[in-house]
Structures are given as structure tokens and as C-alpha cells.
Length: 224
Figure (tube, rainbow, N blue to C red):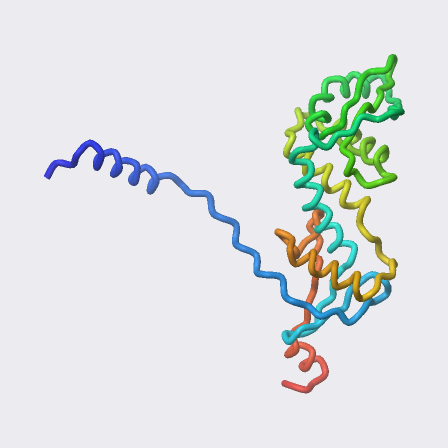
């Protein structure tokens, strides 16, 4: 029996899909466990527990992940949040850096940072997103420019967005050897659990390590 034109097209499309390699979906991450904080270790690690066992969370790495996802989303529409400065920042560069930077101003503008030449090798920062970490704005802009100048190829805005979000997250996160209370720990764990990837920081380091109740009992030879 002859297929209709619609059936023929559908069969051809199905055959084409079968012959085309499909990109594998990344495996879904398990839900972050509900944890009950116990306290801090050395002002650096959060100690928590649940019915499954014991958990140690690197507080800086956890806060970096939270902030990274926050700033990554913000850099999705940075121009809408850019504020013009009453007193522009002045940045100085070498002649070679200035020439290269002049070609990459459009990429900075896509990140919400607006520069203009100010004679010689100087530039004025006219505007930047108002949600950059307070007190770190100039340092962050300088780091973004340094990264831009270090790239040999034309920079993809997605890559700049990622790098800028990482820089912001580093500046805005709590550090090691910083004491925080139980309420702050609970808030941090709740915000971490809401992240798209609560298991690694933006640099790829692990955020949490755990020991099951069985592993703990085995360490103390309560079980064999």
C-alpha cells in the first residue's frame, strides 16, 4: 500500500532522526538533602546531620555557588540595571592594552559596563550595573577588562557572562575563618538547596562531603 505524502514525510523525518546522533542529556542532579545544622568547624566548615549521616559543607564554596547563580542570572539583562555615575571612574592602560580594549568595548557594554576613551591610554567608566558587590565595583571592572584583554580570540558574551558572575561571586561570598551563627547557617543551607547545582562551586570544587551512619559506625567498629 502506497503511503500518502504526509505519511512519507513523517517516515522520512523519523528515519532522519534515527540516523542523526542525539546529544546526551546531562544526568539530573539528586535533590540536595534536608540538613539540620550542628555548628561550625574552624570557622570554615558547616557541620550538619540528617537521618542518613554526617555532612560537612565548605561555607565559602556554598556561598560562591549561591552568588554565582544569582549574578549569572543578573548578567542575563545587565543593561537594564546599569546606572550612570555622577563621577566616572578613570582607568589607565598601556597603549597596546588601550588599542585592544577599544575593540572590545561592545562586549563590556553587553555586560552592562560602559567605557569611553578619555585621551591617551585612559578610559572613563560611565556606567555599570547597580547590583555589583558594593565597594568592589572598580576592582571587578578591572578584573573583567584584564580577562578580556587576555583572551586571544573574540569573546563570546556567554563566556564573559560566566566569568563576570564568577568574579562577582568570589567578591561577595563569606570567607573561611568567618564565624556565622546557626540562623545564618540555616539560611545558607536553604539557599544552597534551591540552587541548580548545589554540589560544586563555580570553580568545580566540591561543596559538601558526607559520611553515612554505616560508615561512621564502621569507623568505630560498631559494625563489621
